[in-house]
Length: 115
Image 1 (cartoon, one colour):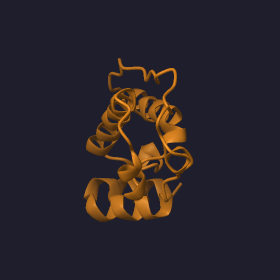
Image 2: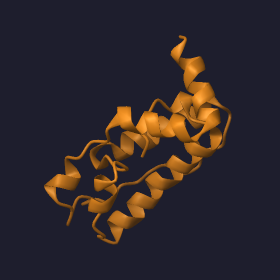
Image 3: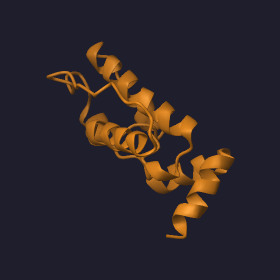
């Protein structure tokens, strides 16, 4: 999860992160530990549903199809540690990484930053 403003994300990163939100739900349903994603600054579990919805809103704004609402398992936190449940993504580091690796995201960021 980049946890950056969805408007600055290129199509590839926007759709990729959207897919990953659904993959995290599958991982949760299988009760697989997510500590590695937290340690890598890639998961903010408490924000998963809102983040998905923010990404879907941006997809809609761009005219993309969205047919996959995110449905969290009833007890989605079962088996996850407090560390995982309370983790946050370092948004500044994430933004730096994203615009450092993707020319299109960097261009969109510069344009967005002007507003």
